[in-house]
Length: 293
Image 1 (tube, rainbow, N blue to C red):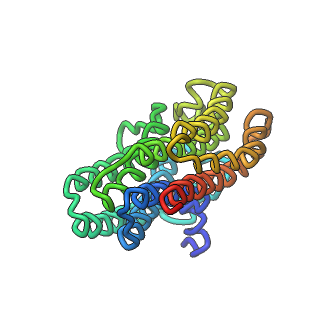
Image 2 (image 1 turned 90 degrees about the vertical axis):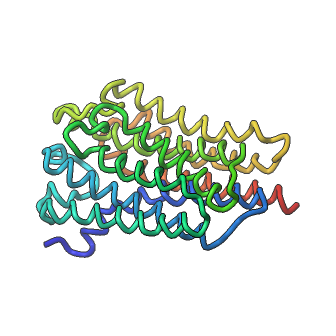
């Protein structure tokens, strides 16, 4: 039976910035619209984190029973290692999804944003379909699309909408930025796993476009994420704060471009997560300062 520490490792805490960052950006955009609400923001964080953990457990289960994780490097896999029964890992995933839906329902009721009910259902279907089911789209090179849409556009603009009942260009630009960084994190993960994924028939985008192009795409995603907010600089000059993140991007970018050992890419995941949190902090602060100063 898996220990508590193993369950925590299986939840992959290094990926949680993907859930927290878009909510922070979306809340800052709501503040810029004069509609920030702390409790709905906390509920949105809870929903996003539970979905992220649920996705991680679902991937652990689905990849584990397919044998995809048998020779993986990186964090421990509960299913593939035999630390926890596959059925238990699957139940943990759906427990997280259920709790996320419950928290999301409370958020929707409080904000009266009823159309988001359909979005919530879509999130669960997409989360499970990433590596689960008979034809998982994560095995067809579409995982990055899911991450960009749901951990970028949906999470960020959905957060803004539940507080302000509208969205804005700063919300959209922030959604694209944090979505690209989250997608870069997934790309780094998939570059690390190219040999084992190819052998297992998991045709991620990194496998499809090849090692070199996948590494370059990581750098390009970070670059666009940091440069895109500059389109707002005339009305929001504080967005220049985002450029302070450039030095933080140098080491993981260099590692992605030059690191030949697959294990050397493992720290890039945590570094990219920190970049996402840094982006959320800098971009969010820019919107707040632009409003109060």
